[in-house]
Length: 260
Image (cartoon, rainbow, N blue to C red):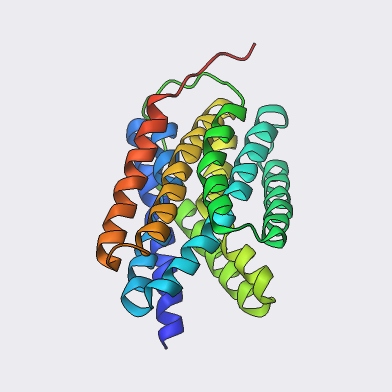
């Protein structure tokens, strides 16, 4: 029963994250929606429950394991963005991005990086990923997302999350961890954005997602370090502060150029 409640919690958070990101995109533009999607909107609250139930050492181990997969998520974003730029077909971009994520993620897990290197790689990869994105001009304006599409986004994200959880439960431990790290919002939102709004909007969304991932990495790095020195509650608050500050800092450095 407890396991079912945990799955239902994750599904609810996935749906809420996709809905919030989509509403933000509809009001403020694709880049803002992507930034919210990249932040730890799903795993952040889940880690709060973990801190209430587990020891700080176990929670720190989970935070470190999550950090290991951040560079693979950046590769996923870059692959989708460049496929959207050249192919303009969401199916091709989706398959290529997830294949790249699984390959890089498996390689990172096999390397077994020491904690300082894992933290450094997680924090540096979003900044490097932002530089490697294609440059397309996308004005920060509100976009039209019909209510039917909003509902479809939420349903698609929750269905994907359910399939991942079920598959991870039947897979070996190493594969399960990699499957659970697949970026759900990073898969669902670009697939809806590309066919309706085009490559420029998709790249803007994914650029925002990268900024959010810097906040994501900062959250888990701060949580991992904080749990060694602070109380779980103080470490959790510090992690959220670092996540928000990091995302805002990278947004301030954003530049766009026109691809001719």
